[in-house]
Image (tube, rainbow, N blue to C red; front, top):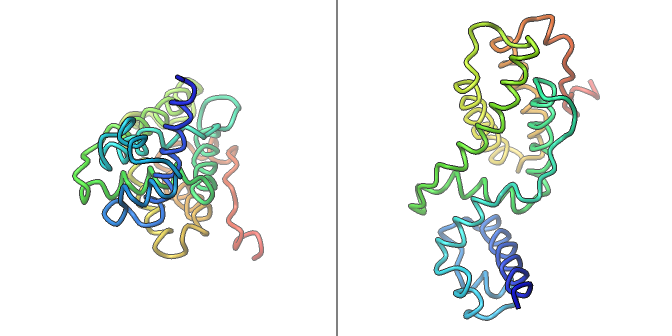
Length: 204
């Protein structure tokens, strides 16, 4: 019985993510999510009391499918993480829906800032490791830079979505790093990093 309940919740979460990803919070409805999930209204309300509850779950669990790059902690892994996320934003519905809802949550009155803090902490951990390796400039504050990186990434993916439906997001993230790295690390460290090349640059 418990396993069935877990599976039912997972089906609902995935269906909700698909609907939120396609139409956003305001245009999504419980009816659309029920139809997408192929379940009854009772099953939905057993797990989630409202559309708002579903949206909060999608925001909170947006990273559930992610498998972050391996390798030594530090700047290279941080760069690799953001490149991986750019690709996942193109194909991972749960991540994409969670990010969309996090951006649009003022419209939905969800007010769930914790997910931004969660991402900032993931980035901060890599920056702290980079500090221990001597990769950062003395003036860098790891906590502040991690928050800045979350903000920069969020804005970049929004612009990419509006411009190309995120098809150019990996290239935009590479460009973001080329702007940010000089404020983060010495030249000799930057020279040792591998920054993914955008497809348009590779063909030039």
